[in-house]
Length: 558
Picture 1 (cartoon, rainbow, N blue to C red):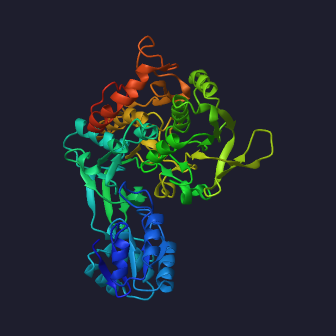
Picture 2 (spheres, rainbow, N blue to C red):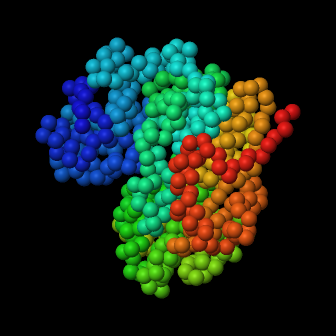
Picture 3 (cartoon, rainbow, N blue to C red):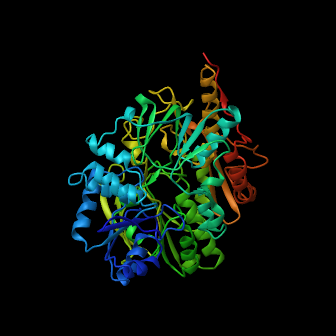
C-alpha cells in the first residue's frame, strides 16, 4: 500500500489488502472509497471483504465501482457527494489509483482551476493531462490535440482471440508494428473453469501472467479503452490518451452482467450461490458439490448469446456425476432452469444429452429466466415466458444455486459507432471484416456473426482475420473465410464427453472421422482431449500462432 496524497482530505493508492484497513485507521483515516469492481484480478479481495475489515477498524466504507475506461460525469458527481458526506480524511483506491484520481479531478472541475487540478495530481504521481483537456473542452477530447501513439495494427483485447490473432498476424508479417490494448494483469484459460468446478483442475492452472503471453515484438498498451473514433483511425484510452492505427482488430470479449439479476452480486460465493463463469467462484462450486448431502440444486441458463452455450448444463452434469459417485444422487432434486426453449441448439447432440438428463433424474424447465436471488433466504425468482401463455413469476427454494450470468457486449463497445442495432460489432460473417469501416476487423465473442461464442471459435477465427489483414496490406481482397466453426465439449460425466462441433446453421463440422471419435455420443476419448490435450494446445499452439488442425475456407478474391 503506497499512499499518495491528493489533498489534505483525500489520499489514494492501488489495490489494498484486508490487513491494510487497520493500518489506515492508525494513520488517521476515517473513511474508505472503493472504485474497483470486484473480480478484476485473482488476488483482489471483494468489496464485501474490504467493507467488513473497514467496519471492524472503525472506518466508514463506500463502494463506487468504475469500469476501466468508463469514468463518467455521473460517477464523478457521486464521488464528490461521498467526499462531502463522509468523515475525513478519506482514502480511495482502485487497481492503480488512476480511476480514483480521475474521479477526483472531474469532481473538482467546477471549483478548482485546471492548473490546480494538474498540480495536485502530478504531485501525487498521476498524469491527468487528458482529463484536464476533457474538462477544458466540455467533456470532449479533440483527437488532433493529443500527441498520438501510432501502430500498423491495433488489437483491442488480450484474451484468447486477441493474443491468438496477434501471433497469427506476426507469423505472416513479422515486420508489422502491432499493439495490444488490455488493462488486465492475468490471462485466464476460461474453458478450464468447468473442470475447476468439478474438482478436476486446480484454478491456478487456468491463469498465467499477461506479460508472459504477449507475443514477442508486440507492444502491450496496459490500459482500458474508453471510446473509438473510426473516422480518425483512433482508439481513446482511459485517461483520454489516444492510440492511432492503420488497421484495427476488436476482440475485448463479453461483459458478464451480474447486476442484471437482482440480489445476485451480494450473495455470490456464499449462501450456496456460485458460478463457474468466474475464476474465484469455480472452486466454490466444487466445495458446494462435495458438501451437499441432499436437497435442491438449481442450474440456470440466461437468454442467448452467452460464452459457451453448453457450460450451464456442463456444471449440472458434472455435479450430478459426483453425487452419483458418492451415492447421494437419490437425495438430490436437480433442476435446470433454461431461459430458452431447447436443451442444446444443435439437434444432433440432444439425444445423448437427454440420456444423461434421464440418468440423473434432472428436471428441465424451459423459458425460465433468473431475475432475482435472495441468498440469505435461499430463494431464486424466475420470469416464466412460455409461448402462447401469459408471462408469470415463480420463486423456488434452493440448497445450491449455480448461475450463468446474463451476458452482453462491454459498455464501451455498445456505445461505439462499430455496432449493429443489437450492440454487437457489425462484421461480414465470412471475412470478419467490418461492414462499414474497411480497415476494422473483429473476432471472438463481441462480434455479431451467428456462431457459438467459444475459445474454439476464436482459434478458428484468428487465422482468418490474420490472413485477410495480411492480404489487405498486400493490396489484395479477402483470402480466408470463416465457416462458423465452434466446439463445445459437453462434460456429461467425469470421464466422458459429448464433443459438439458445428458451424453456421448447425452444420456438423467434426475434427475427427466418426470411427475415431463420434462426437454425437459420450466418449472417453473426448474427455482425454478436453482434460489432457486442449489445455496445452491453447497455451502452446493457439496463443503462439501455431495453427494446428485449422483450415479456414479459401476465398477467391475478385
